[in-house]
Image (cartoon, rainbow, N blue to C red; front, side):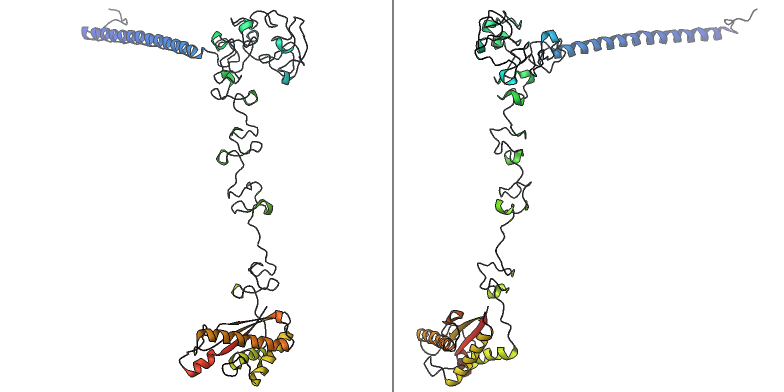
Length: 410
């Protein structure tokens, strides 16, 4: 018996071989059948997607009358013979789509035409603005019949050079009627101008339209109504404000107005009794007169020892001597001033005491004036019994309260 690949030792080996072969063939068929079917389904699905994509792309985005499926430039209005792309045949900077004279160089202000007043460029009998196609002769308002071939005759076509629809009188769709086709109008529901792509005028290009812009010629921010930022709301823009966080007038660069203070003591000149001499606010900007110990004793002796004859404003001879010493101080300090204030105890009527205190202060002022002190450098005032410095219930206290005070100041 010869050895071949199909010689089996027994029936069991032969049966196992054929069972294994059958299993391999069966799974091979399953893989082939279902794998092929899945690939076919995917191919069909891709075709459906492609068809759906084309279907959603059908339209005229740029409003030039050429469907997107045939428009090489679907976002820019153009011409049919240019594949839907813009063209400037005469090289005057005005796209043929908007150019009334696409074959003749003109100016933008004349919509691509030369000056048309009184002119009949194409010799068709239509003159100036009456000729809708100034550089091409035609019988229909100066144009050949249905020049843009949109199915709307020139005689009723409001846009004889632009493909449009019958429903829009031969013009491309323009929802806001601003003359800018919806396809290129960035503000299709708000009337605007061609210079701003169909949006309202925005001279400073800050995103705030001129109609709402309080600073239409100056770029600003929406939060400030189109004006530049002004953090402190003082009317001086931050870019020019030297103190952007503090209110101040324009005349001071946006900073708070500087208060006049000649002597720099912190007391404004309008409140400073000594605007040319630095002093504390407690003395209204005036400094203390810097006297020697002996000179200060002259003042304190006068305050404690100047007395008058009973119930009168007449000084005793001794008191006159004390007051006269103060005259010498006034001459030594010619810029100083003298404040004289009279006071009494509480005995007697308050009104009488007030009058007596005034008269006694004035008596001291007059004595000093007689000694050569300028009256304009002195002032006197009476306070009666209103400012006691001791107890009026005691004799010693009453004596202290009966006094005249002298204060030198600048």
